[in-house]
Image (cartoon, rainbow, N blue to C red; front, side, top):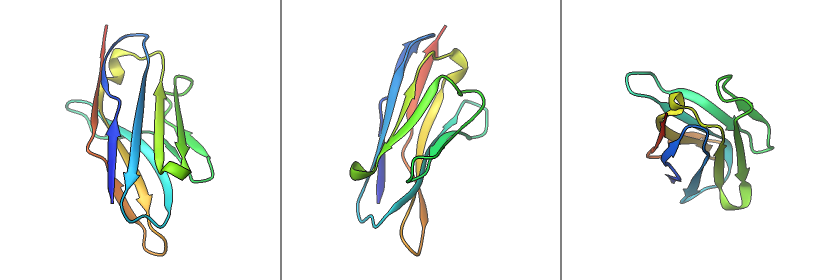
Length: 117
């Protein structure tokens, strides 16, 4: 199983980006999928996650600006990021809990988001 993240880049403050993460391989089922980020010198933190049923959870710092969604048919999770701030600059990682009886957590390779002031 692999998670392939894409969509990062350089954007000015106030701009928008959309991240995508597609899971591929031998997948029986996917539970929670989410996005985490890690800024230089800081610990990795949860940005948002979403269950297979569509229930969402957001970090306080991104509520009202970011929207997480998923396409279960395509095993893909998205993160729409609006009103970006310089403090959103980080490497963004997608995460998925995959499997039936035996669930394994997989991480994508990370995609860099840089927000300039």
